[in-house]
Length: 447
Image (tube, rainbow, N blue to C red; front, side, top):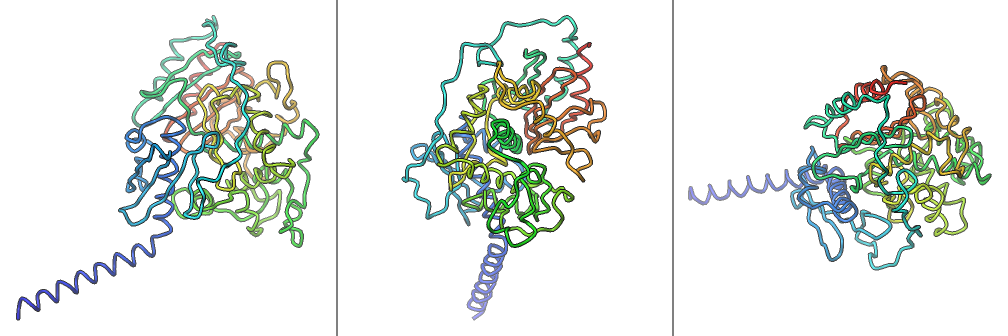
């Protein structure tokens, strides 16, 4: 009798535990879905696009809370990665040559052929920056190389988790350093530096007379309300007044878009106004993907849209390592998913340093650089057109005319026009003291 009662109590306890687990899973399902999605997507890109091992990816790129509660598996034959959380929920990402990795849903047909961008052959004979070959070492008499070396060494440690630093002065690489396991050939995810790629494409189209940034009435969904007054200019400056929550530590508009949506270009189309255009700066990855969708409308075919990102900019300036990944609808994820070597990221900075001229050809003009680096109203001098600014003095020991392409976890391309400098820093954390780093680099060069 006692044993039977004991067994009944044990069963009740187990049942209560199972009910509690079911409730916990139910309420946390959206979060688990995003966690597994992040892990699967990042793993597929790291392994199949960047050529890293699963063990390295799990020990480094996915080894932070709460992503580290997930586990990952890869299928090398299918070129896919699966992320799971305690075995309760699984997400899958597949790698497609030329398009990168993408999270897929169960109804996504992975056997269906996809259009891919046409790419040009890399120039591996011309020295950097106009080709991919190493240039002969140039020693500048006005550079204190010892100070430069000491400055950059300070940013390579466990706390900063820096992966690469490339310093380009007068078109010459004067310093280059990589963390263990990384080289000049290593592709690295730029995260939101991708936004500056997206913005630059508008500058190129404007220079070609194919786009007007003051264009409004952008979407049929907006034609019957005040959203019809939003211009491309407002979107480029993140100043549309559209609702958006950009938070990577919670279930937000940004995380739902990146890890749940099939077509990321449409997410913010359906958002209401919460402020006035040109008066309400709000950083938004949804806006950058909205801009990617607008770029698609400027071409007759999807193939032309895919090709333009490379023929108009990426391959045009020899960023041949770069891959911009697409979503399930085969639109470029213009907010977040460009991968390239540190040297190739530096080339984008040099294009702006040279006011849009590349090896004798004008991709855009100086007016676009001035436009893109003009502070957005209400951004406190921090933001231009898909480009970060120092006009507000965020980095107090660095010239205020410096501007930069910035990404999640401390991906940066800094352009310092007065010093003829471009500095690239990539890593896994924003803990690095960028102000001290840039101050030391600038002070190591006598002008």
